[in-house]
Image 1 (cartoon, rainbow, N blue to C red):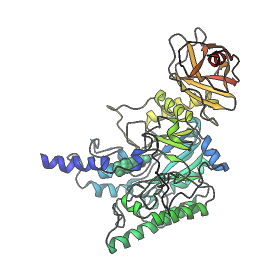
Image 2: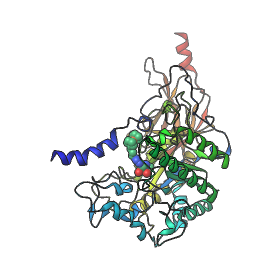
Image 3: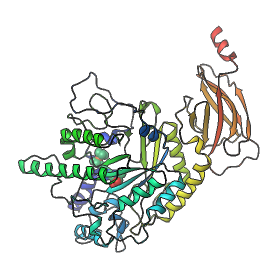
Image 4: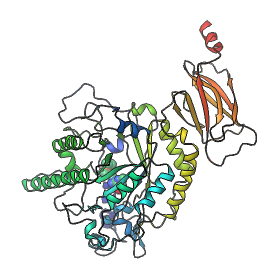
Length: 502
Ligand code: H79
């Protein structure tokens, strides 16, 4: 019994908790700063807050789509009626299924599954249209997950789409279809490769290991250059697995690789997950300079405080089920996020200058999960109506509201209300020294003008002034709604004058 626990539970536990790594630390509090600058040779290569057009576009995307698709999609987190829940870390991890429920000779079965990959309903144009209707401005597509199966006909490995019955280049179809819809494409690339003999999952020690891993690094470089060459329209890469000790040991190689990728593809966008400096510092080098163009938090996590972000660009990637990025046939018995949950996360991200990226896991035939279809449609309907509050907006320097999230564009202020007060008075707090406060208000949808008046609740030592927006009697909304306000200089200075006299 004990032996079994050690055999099955311990490895899973180790996967989750052994490495006290930078990824898990992301967005868990203010950033730690080095006490004094230290020497860093392989640190940040890019200026903070790039201002070129590609980066400006990134800043304004607002909403993105992630797609996890590969051999694992054929399984859908189960095999011959047996669920992998509890036996594999996530649906796209099903190759690592172990424990009493794992099918016999499973890894071998999995490594041969690509011979059945023939998605009869796959239509990249249909996906791209759906993403467009949902309001996504960029897509991140899995070209190769940890299992190593490449969805493009790579010259550097035989384990790729051209060897499946489907044969055709899937990455090309996705890049072309999304680009045609005006959606920017980012390629997801895992640097892990479970079935590659040259990949080792630990820092290479012996000469033999070093030789092998060096081969693996060059192979990785070749594949990335191949992607840039094949798909010149892409805007960036999204890297995964880069916490691996082998990758971390290769800081000189990855530093040069980042340089090379940027030279080959001017404007390329790479997040902070790509690499580390020679001291093992990831996301930010040992002097606190960001490694890459935008901050990648840990998965399925949003920052709590705007201040933690220190003005960086960022995005958050999110699943609908609790975890599991690849297709999961069975959604029963788990909490799956609702459209309202996801819209809340979208607007929370936007209120802090981030992009929100929602994951989809199509099945082995190329169809989205029916629930994903429904959610995409519902999000799209809402986003279309409230686009003004979502795209090309920035954080607003008002006191955060418990009722919803502020966004701002010039002197237009938006409050997306998720928690409607029972008295229908939406009270907005502005710091007493605010140069700009709400002066007029209307409902974004429909444009109905609303009564807005200053409120004075007379709290001693209060740092805020208040503005009440009165919702019309009979106003109904079955989802969050947006108040659009005009910002102007405070009309009444009486409160401040009174303070000054005392
Ligand atoms: O593709 C999806 C997942 O399959 C993949 N990333 C998303 C987008 C993923 N691979 N592994 N993981 C997620 C979880 C890995 C967690 C850990 Fe660690 C790696 C635990 C210990 C090492 C990172 C570093 C988190 C804590 C330390």
